[in-house]
Amino acid sequence: MQVSQLEQALQQQAGTLARELLQNAESARARMLAESAEKLRLAGEHEVLGAKVEAERLVRRQGQAAETRLAAELDRLRWALTESALAEVKIAFRHLVQDETRYLDVLEAWLAAAAQALPPGDLVAEVRPEDEKRLAPRWMKCARARRGVASRSPRTAIPAKAASGYGWPTIAPNTTRRSKPATRAWPTNWHA
Image 1 (cartoon, one colour):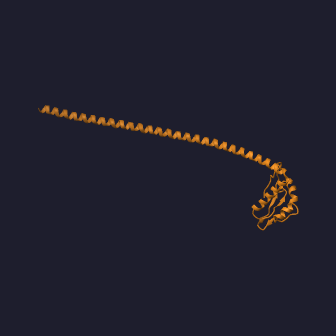
Image 2 (cartoon, one colour):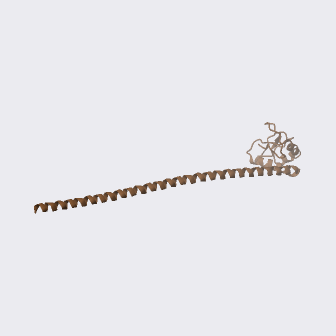
């Protein structure tokens, strides 16, 4: 009986040990499956994030390229508009120059506006030789009307100060710098 009891105890112990080993193996298997599933999930997320980052980079590059193309097109259109406006201004000036009375009134207004806008001091207006000839007959009248110092000739540069700043400016030929002769029918070398 002792032998059978010992056998029975050994069998129970072996069965318990086998069940424990089986449970341990099952839990190790479940843990390994869970870890593998987690690694696969993390690898998948990493791939998805990498793909998203790459897609965002590609979209950003395409957007920047589109912006650059649009900016270049806008610059081209702006330049074309500027060229067109300048061409129209040249035509308008040609028409203005042909109307002697209106042209002289505009020149007078521009000179008066320049004289009022600039700070006090001497002002010499450079005009084209054709405009100097046109302005000479009106110059004395304009200089007196603007409370400046009337010069004897539009070529004489005399300070033209009035109580509130500039009076009527004096006119001098373009002798301070060499420039190409004006080929346009409108002022090309206005400056104070």
